Image (cartoon, each protein chain N blue to C red):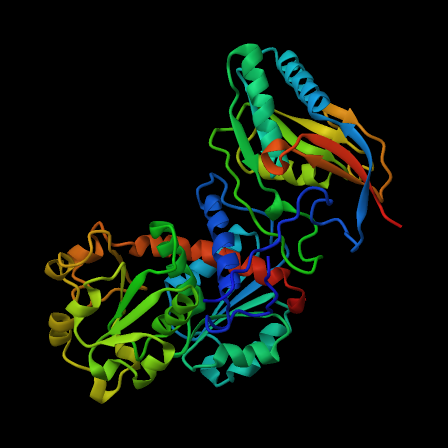
Length: 309
Length: 205
């Protein structure tokens, strides 16, 4: 076990051995979910603070369940209804929370680099649960876990990431993680939603959906992020759906063993037609299930590293 | 292509992760069990388990990873040879129940726990290779209770080397082995090490 980090900030930082350790640990954590008594005493007496400045259902709940199954005390802090509304800065809030001696702070913020900022200033472990359009490492880890589980391995697989890549921290984290694990990544979407720097990350760019998904082992559909778009890049949804949505007809041209993934929340009928989202190729709910296991692994490994103490 | 990293998995010639392990080399001092005597010890334990439980109907074996699991499987086969019924065998990883988490440089690797039968109402025999401080067994009992309420928990160990730190006493013992704390009891099993033997090792100095 090679885990030495105080924080988990990005997939870009991690090497293949670290990702492998995280996934192996997460896999063993899954067994706890199947137990009658879903609790182990591992993190008894440890405190995990969820500091969420952006809306979240899956991620926050998943961190909360992960912490509770490991017997940590989990405190949820959301920007609305807190002193953040009164104008307290992120760092001030975090310093105040740190004064209550948590062991792990899980942070989601609309600004890229928010988690790294906290990591520099706080002595406790910091987990990035999404910082702007930068990274969302635990999402990439749960995606990798889901793929590894279904396909048996990661290296050599072809992945198509489709949609709003420009605004997607999920895409960025996945691209870094997948490249590290030896996978081939193709991104596809309307030119306005594909960042120019994409090729520097070592991914192929395609501007036709059919071409991108034809040989894919895994298709990851991204959510169109209305909340991060201003003016120019937003297009009428119907047009987007017609050109870039994954319909049943398009699915029939894919490999017979293709996996359909989506980080949620799904805009039904936009990126994914409902019959695809609920169909047999979809592993969307497996992703959510694996999310808890991955976050248990992250909390376990971070609370043990000496740097955090 | 990046070089493949392989995490180093220590064999049980070292104390279980968690005890202090200074960087020193060890030499074999005495061999205490060989293939034949180790097998006899397991045979006797199998008989004792059957005798005390008056049969095998309620018995289940749960081995503590890694070598305890192998020993549990072997004892189960011996019980089958005696009673023509093989008791269910499970494997327990106690990492998440350790009392020394966070005291070491890095977290120990979590391995899988596989208990596919209900422990409720059963006589569960915990099986481990070496009984030392008793802390592993404390953790194992806690872990087992999280799977349900066994009627009885009993403890079988291949070697009892003394130095208990908790009030724990084994029910079935392969070999009582007075040791000094600085020595190491190395249990080698065919399935992991290619040979069946138990040796005491002492530091070279």
